[in-house]
Image (cartoon, one colour):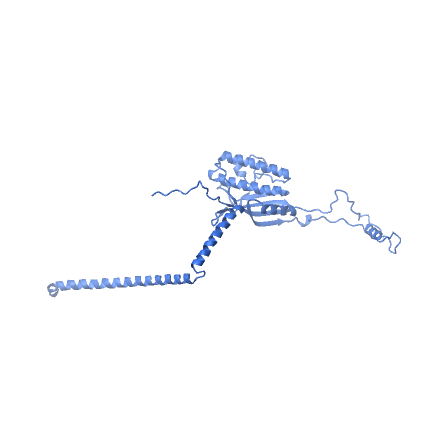
Length: 337
């Protein structure tokens, strides 16, 4: 202790030197680990750069010009698609009264159109909707409720427009009967997958800004009328994308054609003999006695020769609509400096 007291300054300087030495060692180790991490990151960036440089096509001036030309071609194709795909209609401001007036008017027009074309509509599934047993074209709850959520009025008006347009296609094709129409749910009061509501939802294609609205219809018709329906869907102004097509034919008891009437063999033999100038008794073949049960068809009006049964068709499709392009009045807001 006496030696430390005599050499106190030396001991203090020795302790300071030891602390500095330990601190320098810790700093060296940490700096070395950071240097190794920076070296690894630099190596990864170098490998990524080498991969980009060696990748085809190489980003030279020629390939950049080709990419710009393809971008212009894509924009032209997108502008042409505006002609093929229909855009969202504008309904203006809607409230409960205006929407219900539109709904009542549209359903009335569809009923009169179906009556003119001879198309049978299904009976209403809700007798308390205020419209008796009439079919409401998937809008039973909307006709029953007194107040509708304001956020659902525009989507409901769009669905009503879609149903009116493809119902006109079905009625113009003169189908026999409409069995049902299903659409996607709108609002919280329409559970998905129940009644006239599909389990599918409206989706959006963010690449081209298109809305995809699924629908399903079931109707009865003949095969020729089914071809007319598909032809009119192809030539319609709206973009209809056919997803599913199920055809249910009648059962074996009700076959497509009725059983042919039995042919009288005596009449057939007489026709054969008259063809070659023979008369009964001239040949060696004895005359064939006709069976009273095998009577030839009279050819009168009402005799069924061919009877075709209508088929049941379930058609699932999507209506694709593009968002309208920005107008000149929708100028971007000026930034404040």
